[in-house]
Length: 161
Image 1 (spheres, one colour):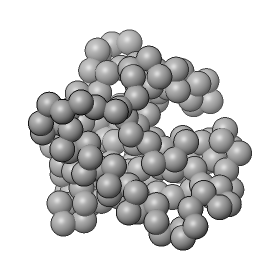
Image 2 (cartoon, helix red, strand yellow):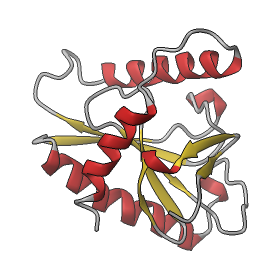
Image 3 (cartoon, helix red, strand yellow):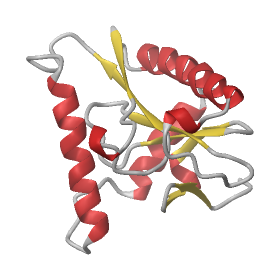
């Protein structure tokens, strides 16, 4: 792997959690998944240009974001024997965006995974708030280990070759 860490807003994502990269993007497993298979997909801009909001994307970046999200979503749905997908973008702080960088949450969904389908958004928001609090203050974390995340990323690397 060419880099040890990927920049995700102000945070660093260890390369072992990243399972897919292109010239403009990378996908990684989630530290606090809302459902099994919940991943994050972000743009990785070569020029290190910070892209906080969807409106800040160039046309090429927008096409790349959705082209790869489409591909990864289809593969995750199949891999997890899911029947649907939730694609979630929190575009700006008032929309719940806790990392100031454009990214898509991709969540494989199954029948009955939530009593009310829209409860997934409340859970995503709560996970984001928990993570922000944990990152802001050094409290005991209940995050997945780097090894757990690396094992999941290894499994996903096999289907995105």
